[in-house]
Length: 365
Image (tube, rainbow, N blue to C red):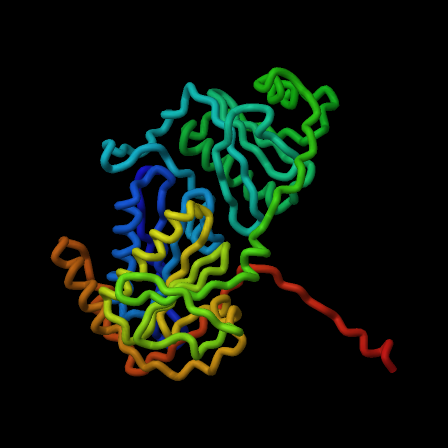
């Protein structure tokens, strides 16, 4: 939790080219300097790879589903950090502690440790109670079969990692006591059974925030707000960097002809903007001109057809290979020559809500 990490995901496309996604993960206890350094290093890594990667800022507890999908079955950040002599969690390190985790999500699972108290429990999610000799999975009455299956994978991971696979497990159904011994044992940790209150719907202003788009231009070390009647592609100049603030997400668009120093400066400005406003849950997505995501393009009134950008990543891979070779690492895969023609592939962002409509034409005849 006290460190920041950079994760590079490389996908080989059908035409032989490579697509890169760079994520930098910020632990909740990491310092501002470390987080800023991680942001700068992602810019440098992208430049070495040919300047076409999509970069994501991931904050502990608010990671994107894309990021979480890399880890099976989940991520469970541990206390510590490099400065404090970080040590990996050893098996049985939690032997005498009791932990309560909440699990949510159908496609990927979000796991978060919550206070060990009855007030942490509710009907909407699944909870895992990890005790010295037994692990309980409490299935909220409003949870789905898919969520329960994902939580079961987490339970098995906890059993194998912290108990050497040698503890008992039990499933407890929300609201179904029926003189169940295991349910009674579970509620005994919370002082006995009592009905859980219904949670009031949480205030969610993200939709309102997303309707108010703010475009800022990074110019000579400072951010200037840009006024516009409608958000158009023509507002973006290829020799500048821009921040598009959508509330829940902050896009950093970097023009193709901008220098590495300008991109670093814009990245620092984005980090400072979020830090000053205390917006810990805002996702930052960095894009290079010509390799924008569908989500980013959808914010604009119109987006022109992207011209073919014939870029070679051979030089970029050579730079990275040379760097890694100096560190004594095997660089055999990086020395492979790039294909003669490399067409950029559009990246389809699958987050958000999909609505399907069916038209019954027979009823109109």
